[in-house]
Image (cartoon, rainbow, N blue to C red; front, top):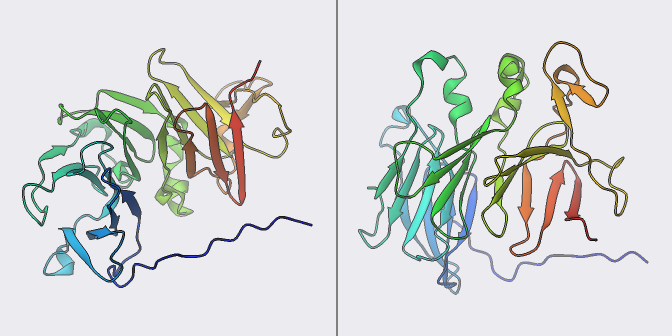
Length: 288
């Protein structure tokens, strides 16, 4: 007899969003949480289902003047008055709810100046931030755009302190990725428990890990073929051009329908969860 797990809603918080909700974040006071859609962020109390406070509203009076949308939002892990939200223009705004009821004026504004030499038709699309996460310490913010993961120090707004290339070999494929809509995929990113390693997904069921201390990185694959119990994951490498080695995979043979958009890391153990299409993989650090 198969065990079936079923989720039933205890409360329904309705009628506060006109657009698709992209983020939900629980506050460190454990009494409130926020929900964000393309144009608004609302603050809720867990005990009140029929009323919320609008804390961010970027909807212009004339929708034809709309130039950016909210892509992700999260509360600070320790300061219940502080939260961040990211935009499709590649910017991050830090807001303080103590300043005013409607946080239409940010406390800090994080943006990396664009290199004019790298400007292309796709620049604006690939700079859109798909995920934003505070570090557990609350000192840093991590953002994910289409090609990179960036780490920002809360005390430095003009540029990130670390930039990691997730799949730079796709830069030459942006035209075909635009045509098949993959360029609009929204990848998440996560910290490990000590904020020393970050993880994010890619295509071909690959996911990437970056060690912030050693600056080493690894590409691993979540697939049924190599997911036997206690099997050790082997690092994968993508070949861009020239002669391909036996253990490498050509960039032209990557499967863009297999993508890892959602990942999670256990708060204290080295255990990760990776969602690949309709499969959930759970991996843990090698146990001696």
